[in-house]
Amino acid sequence: MSVLIWLHIAFAIFAIGPLTALTHAAPRAIRNKNTGLLTFIHRSTRLYALLALGVLIFGVAAGVMAGGGLLGKWNMTASMTLFIVAAVLIIIVERDLKIAVRVLTSESPDDDAKVQTGRIAAIAGVVSLIWLAILFLMVVPD
Image (cartoon, rainbow, N blue to C red):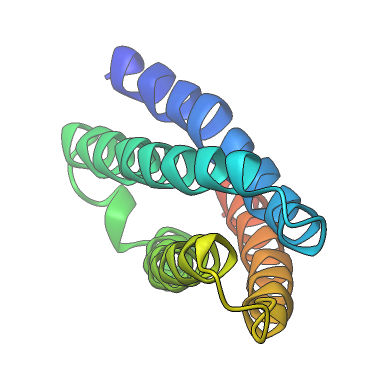
């Protein structure tokens, strides 16, 4: 079980950390019309979002190995629910990054992806707060 918890923590550090940094860097890349960087951010966001699923997978596996009673606690249920909400929001960010890359690589100067810039910045902030809430729920005493 301790290996599962270590994997859970490792995925949280090495997947969610970069994912959060990437989503916060995207609005600046859009404002600067840096399509090369934005393309990198888009691809990396997809990769780290998939890797972040390891946090949920290994967390649930550790909970099951602990007898399953751990998963029924209110803080674990709340954290898993918040994780799913964050995952849905990251899917929206990924969609907006894809649109921003397409818009900035097009020939039309009419659209500068300002809508995507604002939405990505707002959602990235909300997702960061969700990660902090989940962290709090992981260490809250029973």
